[in-house]
View 1 (tube, one colour):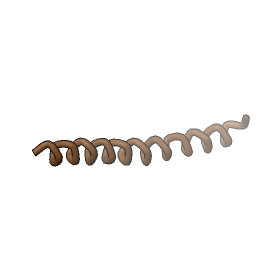
View 2 (view 1 turned 60 degrees about the horizontal axis):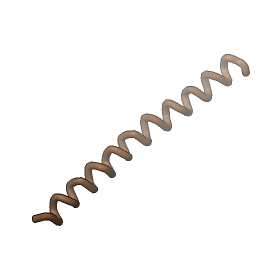
View 3 (view 1 turned 60 degrees about the vertical axis):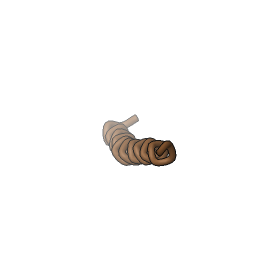
View 4 (view 1 turned 30 degrees about the vertical axis):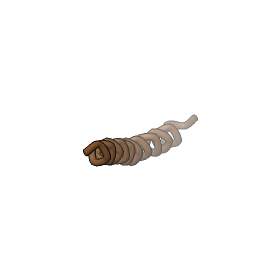
Length: 40
């Protein structure tokens, strides 16, 4: 694997991490809020 190809893959991985983590966190947070609302 050439260095430029490796850098390309790493940028893809980091982009995926930076996009997926906030979305996952938001979904978990919303589901927690939803649960609290149902309990009242």
